[in-house]
Image 1 (cartoon, rainbow, N blue to C red):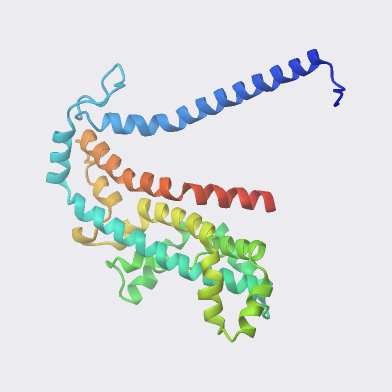
Image 2 (image 1 turned 180 degrees about the vertical axis):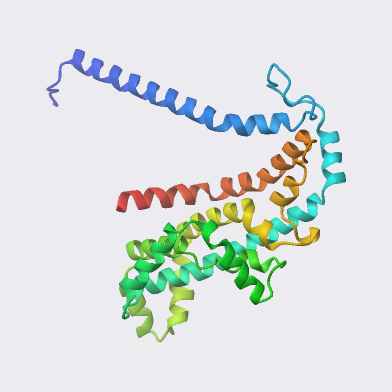
Length: 289
């Protein structure tokens, strides 16, 4: 027979305190979730009103009926779907090249010992401290020298091997993949690249999802690089096309909000499919320190 050392009244008080704590926690999380989602909700709501109704009071709390008009203005004043395809293509290529080069770099820093490794890794991390705008002029001059100005490749290839991605991959490989696995593959006769491609790469799923998601979002929303590099309307991306709706004296707010809402949908879909891996990787990194 089990004898409880805590009096029943004390157990009841403890359970009530725990229940109260959980209720307060869920209320706080609910409020934070509403505050986070509110701007997104109002963006979709206001995208269904014309420019004269967007700023009218009281604030619109539900969807209007001006979506067809806004969509017509969007198509008349911009080459929206061409820009949508350009952004999709550039973002996908950015993800592919970034995942390949960053995983390769992270694998090298995690699994190999070579002269100057610590110095090279420190210099690599040091580049994170340099504001990206400071590199805009050298970036443009280099692209001009090799003839990539005006071409989409200038937006997705140069930043593929970035310091953040290599650091993220290196940390994940060091904490999750033992070197013995690589040595066993060598004994079996695998070449160095085949070890990376067939053994290490399939184990990088969570961190690949995390880096792929952040890379896609950054590339999708990139404005300054596209503004500097692209010349022709046919190559413009969504941020450039949506910016063209903001004239000096006349801003088509309804069409602008509708275009922004449509441009947000792919990011939401991508986050839904990769959020589990994204959160899992962040939690794993937090536990392992």
